[in-house]
Image (cartoon, rainbow, N blue to C red; front, top):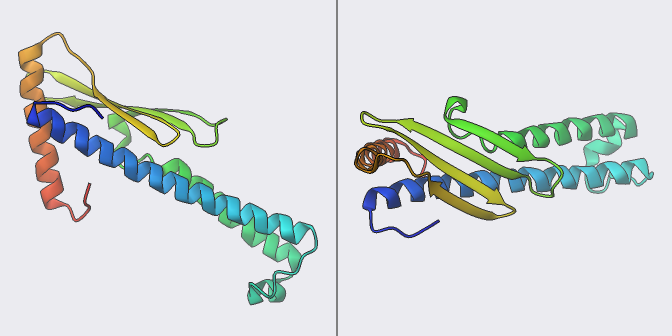
Length: 164
């Protein structure tokens, strides 16, 4: 996140930085939980008894326990993918690279104001977050649009119980 003397730009960049931070935290937590369940599955497949840790596993038996573990893994993998859907899909073009430990995400949020359109790009690499307001040719119109977006964000934050 860059520092700016424009208070509207600071509001916008701060909002999207916090949004990306929350998304990364949610994705990371889901990824860790899926990893933990994969470890449990491997333990069951190796014949280890999980009954001491999970008394219900003893009642279910290994086949049913593996089935439950597979469902949990699938749920956490879905949660990881959904972590970036904090804003409506029509506002973002998401691009992920699934072959990395923590998928890189590039989201471009498009806002149309009364004077111009404004794009805010959020890019992640691991836990690094970069937020940029993409330049437009119409400097004055872009400034007014930033003010409109900052106002919308401020009202949304005030009316929401979620602290973004």
